[in-house]
Image (tube, rainbow, N blue to C red; front, side):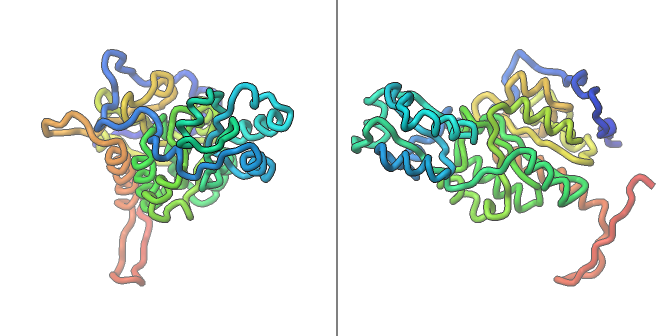
Amino acid sequence: MTEKPHPVSRNNSYKSRKPTINKTKSLLRTNSYPKALEKDDEVNDLVYGRHSVLTSLESGRQLNRIWITNKLHYDTRFHSLLQIAKAKGTVIDEVNIQRLNQITHGGNHQGVAAQISPYSYQDLDELISQAKASTDKPVIIIADGIADPHNLGAIIRTAEGLGAQGLVIPQRRAAGVTSTVTKVAAGALEFFPVARVVNLSRALETLKMAGFWIYGTTAEGGKLLHSIELRGAIGLVIGSEENGLSLLTQRLCDQLISIPLEGKTPSLNVSVAAAITLYEIYRQRWSSRLYLGSGPNYKVKEINCDS
């Protein structure tokens, strides 16, 4: 027998529900990956020099990150434009000349460099509205600090392929949608919206208020994945490669879930864990359908499993 989640109705009661949190051990340990963005990705899509960066800022183009000296940060030509860019999700880093020399490989940066985003992020509220309009059982993935762009790209490819409605990523200490992510996603980003938020905890609360039930993946300590009925609107939180879900994120989850492992390996790669969990969500939904016929013209009939 499987366990059913609580009703999706929210009001203000969701704040009191907290899953059991294992504080003595990291809840998600995956294969070793970099703690920060890959260094190669910092120089992909890079522009530098005052005129080039100013032009990018003035055009309103989405920028992942800007590296700028303290002196130039508060220059009248840059300051207001940097504030606008920050409000749109751009990370602003004050750095010294040596760091800029390193980022630009000795280029003539004139005190500023920027990483142009190859992707235009969607507003979170817009993503939620679009997801709920497309289906009555939307699935949105929330990446809690995934640093490796290959993992992020693999998650996007799997999520779009299985039918999820979007992804939420944090602005800081996580991979953005770079050219590497786009390449690994293999075209999925053409159809898959991503929202980049300043405060991930606030984003989770926004999803809850919109009727999403939040599941957090853990290496151990959660309810077994196959023992839960994964119905309704779902927000699936995937933790970082190194540390898993933060304690604050765990507290905001309605339920922590774990994938049972029988072998000696104690954990899975984060993108593999995400793929398995997403497949189980959709497997349960597919099991409520009756497929009639075969080939491209087969018919699908929904079955009410509760009757």
